[in-house]
Length: 162
Image (cartoon, rainbow, N blue to C red; front, top):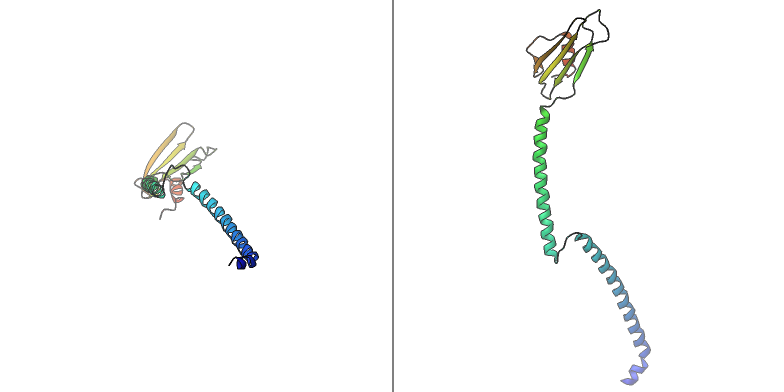
């Protein structure tokens, strides 16, 4: 048997060298994969002191639950703000004009302040040499209970009330 081992020793040495090289290549590949896995694990547990994957999952579950609570709170607040916005004045409209022929500089004006439901008021200032007057007329659903001047009608029409 010793004689056969001596006869094939070169082949045995080559086979063992090939196995050693193959083992070394596998070890390098595994080392690279472990390094990548370690880097990903550190990135996953960044800022969290956990000892097991189970603890990590529980921490993330708690975070997701808190985020859902925060999101629901934000939705409620957004709905409240949307309701409040319906009663806020949208873009004010203003029309400047001369109330009297002998006056210049367009010192009289009518201004409409309406919300999304066309509720609000029209403010009118009539400027004259001797006196000035200021009027406020309530608008409900785009209509006034009081008679509107031509200028007030023009400013109300700018809202394109259906």
